[in-house]
Image (cartoon, rainbow, N blue to C red; front, side, top):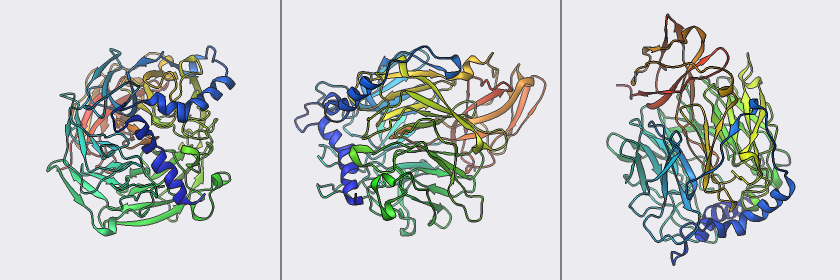
Length: 553
């Protein structure tokens, strides 16, 4: 299929057609997801329910999910806050919704198991936007959809900021360019770079992606357009939205899938350098030529404390309203090598895309949900998977499946699903606009390590540490501690985890305490709030303690 045809398929029909179905110009419903589900999801759901048998009791080493709890909305974005709560936003499950709000938002307290309405009072639609954190812990959301909703979708310059302390949304400084489906990444100095996204003019002939890259200064609240040398090497191709990005310890900014050719951005010279092309996935989903090797709705992580990037799952084409077939393939690239190339990694057990990739508290990795296709919801995967790194080679580990969602076959976490790691080591999952029964619910997963013995406790730890600083963690379990780490809170949407980072720390064991050393600089851990965890020699993590790293002075 020609890439321009694919552009119309995904850029127009994925969120744009959904949004138009959800928001008619008569304000029939801001989020009549049931209508969309009847059109795009229920057929797949019916097939799924007819072919997959209900799950039975599972071994405790597969973990367990809670029963679904309602949020009343279908969540498309989710972000963990330093308060331990999770802010989510998306679309209503059904019924009339004249504005405001155009973007219903909820605050989930996973300990109290409560849901509070925190919808903004201003009329911006920031679904299918970028999301990341500022150094003060506020959440920055960039772009969204134009109002009234364009049938073909279109970007906006609007930004929104959520304050965890006041639990309120405010409008931020507008960007210089409109964006829909952009990616955010925080840099070492605490500024935020935003890249890609639909422009403001979309028609039945398609859209264009914004090539200009912008930087946000959280101190001044000013957006700055970077020079042309920093323009997105993907160009105006809106087949390549929500690029997977990561700031590496080297200081270089990685940009990968969905484009088949990775690129590195040098913040000092403000220039891009093309890197190696990813490996071909199967038959390339029917794509040919330069499009072969693209990978959509995949997960990406940085191998801790290295310049290696690992991607897993995905689909080689975004045809069929969101994908052709899932893959079990994983691949990685090591930028510490002179001429790095993509290498094959350990395969998933089940083919999937639209999954959310998360670091767990013990340093393992979880692929939450997803589906095997075709489309946004076809053949959803009941079972998630957890990757345990190899003892001597991190990439040399193995994947294992988890207990299925809610012990039945009625939960779909495909396109537009969300998952975040919680401070207590559990995982919250919600969303997916499939039209299935539990789209407007959340569930919480308890990983196997919560069944592996007594948890260590952090009696006290500093709330603020500077780069390179030694700091003391008081714990009665010091003699059993095998690792200490900082974990960045996660802000996820569209299978894209824009803020993920797991940072193991050097440490020494003392009497009743552990002395750890903070990361050297912002390339290893950009300024902001982190979850501090200690893990025993049996692999059991503590409940996290929050610590803030301010920008270097």
